[in-house]
Image (tube, rainbow, N blue to C red; front, side, top):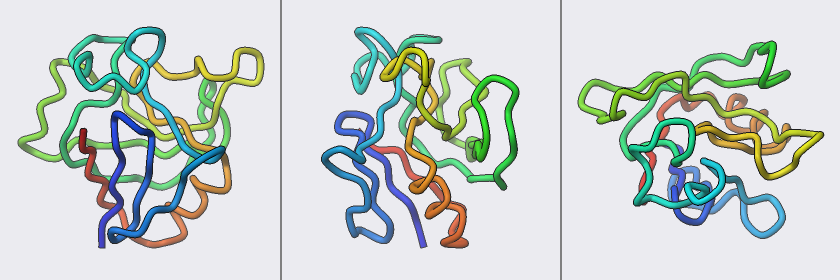
Length: 125
């Protein structure tokens, strides 16, 4: 089973069923690169590049916070030299600006992702 994330809309699907939308939609990238697929190659600005990633178990990250999920690119996923992709929560001090390419979702969505047992994420435009 697979999770699918859209670079452009921030929408998340699980097995083709929408999970997050409206107020619960996520985002990736910042500034002009936020949810902007054209800028996927731009380090620290663009959204996570399209491709397949393996979702790893949650951990507490010193900067990104609790219940962070690391994303490991699959062989063949073009990351444009970028790395360190994760799914984590938003900034409390500066909401809407926590991503330098990571996927941002609220805690309940991150928990739902991990608790599903499905560890494949496909990032699409």
